[in-house]
Image (cartoon, rainbow, N blue to C red; front, top):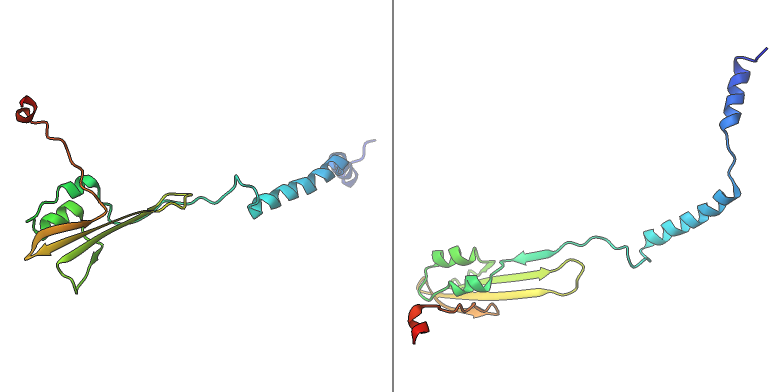
Length: 144
């Protein structure tokens, strides 16, 4: 007569219970070591994700080429955007500063442009943003 009740449940539990094998015991320290190395950052292929950092006003050479002496403050603001620095002690001077550091790089791109006004009109522009010079493909010059 087959046993029923507690005895059958006990046998079922024993049948599916496995003991750790020797091969599993050697894998555990190897797994722990590899996880520790990855967590400590010793591996050169593992590094945290870094984002690109941009600060300031990005002024392109095309934007600088649109500036003409005699433009009003509103026209300059329309072309270049709101200045990053407007000094209360130098009301006729606007500074456009841009700094960019690409992700995972130590290289820093830095640009600076200063716009000077006189009597509310653009007088001169200084800085390291050079205006792009576009060729004038007019037919008069090509025919000569």
